[in-house]
Image (cartoon, rainbow, N blue to C red; front, side, top):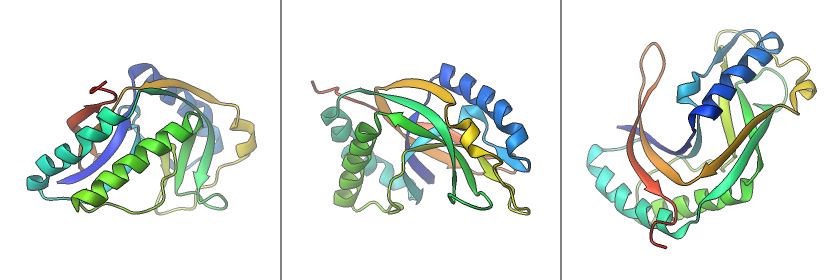
Length: 186
């Protein structure tokens, strides 16, 4: 099973993503937009894991949710990976609440390390992918400074999720396998 751990978005934020993508379309020709219903904040990418490891994951992640309190994040501003030249990923940043989001990721990373479940060890960067450069052409973000004031909105983070990703020719299909509520033990 291909899996990741994420903070999922509410419908108002998904609606805002579509509006921002329309605003940005003239500035980034050749981009493949992420479907708004698939947008999420990845906390940890797990990759391919055995289905048999799901109960172990649930057991190690549940206490993380119970220890953390809900918090609010504000999403806005636009950037790209890599930061210069032809882009691979176009993203919206986390303006407020990034420290709380990073703490949640740190707690999840620690739980995964203790559980011996494999995961991608890249450093965490709080961002929301809204588009990807076309693999067969160079895609450039024209005048990115014009879009730094774009605001997506706020989200009260009350949970995080274990997600399954099935790759299809039309794009990935995500299924929530479990949700971990923040502060449940309090």
